[in-house]
Structures are given as C-alpha cells and as structure tokens.
Amino acid sequence: MAVTDHVDLDTFIEGVKRRNPGQPEFVQAVHEVAQDIYEFIGDKEQYHSAQILRRIAEPDRVVSFRVCWEDDNHNIRVQRGWRVQNNNAIGPYKGGIRFHPSVTESVLKFLAFEQTFKNSLTGLPMGGGKGGSNFNPKGKSDAEVMRFCQSFMTELYRHIGPDTDVPAGDIGVGGREIGYMFGQYKRITNRWEGVLTGKGIEYGGSQMRPEATGYGAVYFLQNMLKHQDDAVDGKTAIISGSGNVATHAAEKITQLGGKVLTLSDSGGFIHDPDGIDQDKIDWIKHLKTVKRGRISEYCDEFSGASYHEGERPWSVKADLALPCATQNELDGDEAKAMVDNGVMAVSEGANMPTTLEGVKVFHDAKIMYGPGKAANAGGVAVSGLEMSQNAERISWDQERLGNMLTDLMEGIHEKCVEYGKADGGYVDYVKGANIAGFKKVADAMLAYGVV
Ligand code: GLU
Image 1 (cartoon, helix red, strand yellow):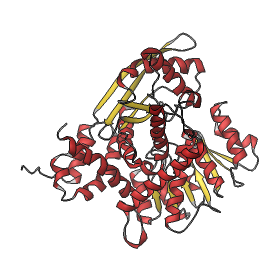
Image 2: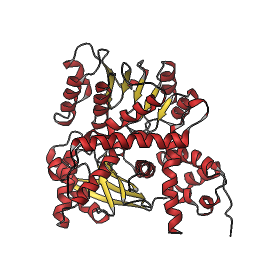
Image 3: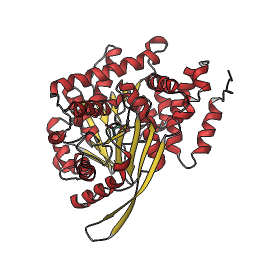
Image 4: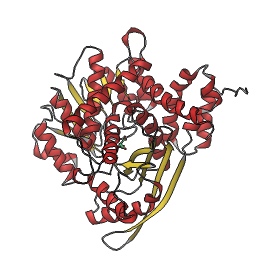
C-alpha cells in the first residue's frame, strides 16, 4: 500500500493559507482545529493516507449568487448571497444563515467548517453548512426585509431541501426572516417540508428552539463547574451581546442563582452592578426584537447602570464569562485581563469569539474554557430535533424538549472530557471537542472511500 508523505502541521497550515488567500477567519478556524487533530492522528495511517483533514478543510461546494431587491424608495439594491456546504458525511448539510455587513466568503467558510465539528458533537445526524449575505437588516423596514428574504430564497431554494441542506437562523436572521424565507420556499416549490429550522411554533417550529443556544451554553458551563464540584449559584457573570443567545444565557444564569453584570451590542456595553434580572431581560428582549433599539437605551430605563460606548465588557470583574456576540470579540490582552480579574470559567455562546491568542491565554492559565463548537451546540441540536419532529409530522412538548436539551449538553460535555482530560483534573475542552467532533466525521468519510 502506498504511504502518503505526512506533511507537518506548519506545512499544512501554509498550504491552507496559500489555497485560501484573503480568508483569515477560515485559516484561523482550520489552524485551531488542526493543532489538536495532528496530535490525535499521529501515527494513525488511515487518516493520513486518506487525506481526511485536507478534505474536511475543503468545502464540498461554495455557492455564490446575486440578490437584487427594491428598497422603499424604489432604489434597486444588489447584495451577494452564499451557501457553503462544507461536509455531509454524517447527515444533510445543516447550519444557519447570517445577514450582516461583515459577512464574507471567509467568514461563512469558517462557520461552515466549525459547524461540521459542532454538529458531529451533538451525536445527531447532521453535516455542516452555513450561508448568508452582506445585507444589513438594521434600519430596514419589515417590507424591505421581506423583499430581501424572498429574493435570497428565490436563488437559495434550488440548493437546499430537507434531506439535502437545512438552513436556520444566525446573526441578523431570527423568527421574522425565517418566516419570510420559509414562505417563499413553500410558494416556489409548492411543498411544505422541514427545509428550515427555527420556524414559528404555528408552522412546524420546535418548543425550546429560541432558548436552546443560550440555555445550552449555560448548561455546558454548569457541567464544567460540576466536574470541579462547583456551581453557578452565587457567582457573577459578564456576558456580551444582547440578541437571542445572550438574553437566553442571561436568563438561565439568573434562574440558576447567578448575577449577570453586563450585556452589549456593536455600539458598546452596559454594566449593571445590581444585576440584570428577569424583568430587565424581558425589557431588553422587547427592545431588541420589537423596537429594534440599541442597548444604550437600558441606562435611561434602569438607574444605577452605566453605558460604555465603543467598549467590550471583558474588563469588568466577575467569576464567569459568556461571549455571545460574534467572532474575534475577545483578544489576548482582554483574556489576560479576565484571568487577572479572577474569571474561572468561560463558555462561548458565539462562534469563535476568542482569538487564537486569547485561547492560548485561557489554556495556559488552566481556567475552564468551553469553545463555541461545544458550548453553543444546543441551538443546532434542538434544530436537529425540529427536523425529526417535522419528518414525523408531530410536535413534542416543552418538557420533553427541555430534558432532551439538558441531556444533549451533558453528552457533549462527556465527550469533551473523554478526549480532552489531562493531568491534575484539567480538561482541555478545545482538544476534546475537536477530536470527538472529527472522529465521527472522519470514520464516516473513510467508509465512503474516495468521494
Ligand atoms: N446558527 C446556529 C449555530 O451557529 C444554529 C444553526 C442551526 O440551528 O442550524 O449553530
């Protein structure tokens, strides 16, 4: 049997950079995973000779398309749309759609790559994909958002399907956008089928899906703490973001007896030393989803809170941290300040919010650090359960889904411990998540031969 030359890690990363020019986010995500996978595959010749890592780091396909729409002033606007189908070894492509001006092919390729490992970790049969557009929904009327979503779906529909690729929400895509896109898919195809998840409860959505990512990130945190005989109760937490993930993470921290000190948006962060309790969280949910306002308005409503324009919340002293906004929102210096401030555990509700330098700081300090691909997998896991319910044409109740979510997060934590435990009780959750996520996908790919 021919034995392939093993390229070393640095050469592999150089190759990824060369083949993906101008795509720093994608290279960053592959780099982070490759470090652990290289250690794991070591002398396992089957993964080397089949070039498994090289193949996972090359999307099955990237579809790019033009999206034209008309704004309320009758101007014709042109946006770019994408769907990255990274890997479907273990199930249909699955992953969200992001509408944000920062969306590029690099960002979507990194997200689809991460999603492949995340979805594998859930234990459910889902491959990895991601899509989106540089469309900015902020400041647009409902009618404009509807026209954009319809135009986007008019192109996307030919690439997706309940057994092919099942998109969902992400930044800038919530219940409203999913409704418009599902309606358009149904109109074009004349089929009512589970082609999107995160749908409204009236039309095939699942109980617990809105809560799942944020609650799941806190359950993961709870599992990490429990593993060290500790708990959320009585601890303070700093959280970034104020969207669906951040507000539900804040809600669950509060329910478990913790005190949430901060939330943020792209303009800055609010610090409320009295704690952001359930009433305040409900007010923020309304502000963000109905009024579509800014987090700075919090300080006009609740005295005692301060607004820090243009800043991120990582300098506020706390026990726990949940980055729930976006990628690369926490760098090496901020991570160092957090460690110096006594942060004991970090659970990522967002995808890749910590830079490679930041991850190294947490790792060297040996604090509990749950990377997004494990900690925020609750959202896509309940999406997987929405697919099952749609296929069965049945809806399960909230209690059942709530229990399934806690069990799924416990299972993900266990897998991370299995592959990530080190000396002295320390668990390297990044390594655990990468290896456990990789193994299932890699073994399925080996079974298929060269495809
Ligand atoms: N966008 C979410 C994520 O990053 C959810 C994806 C889904 O439900 O398919 O995992």
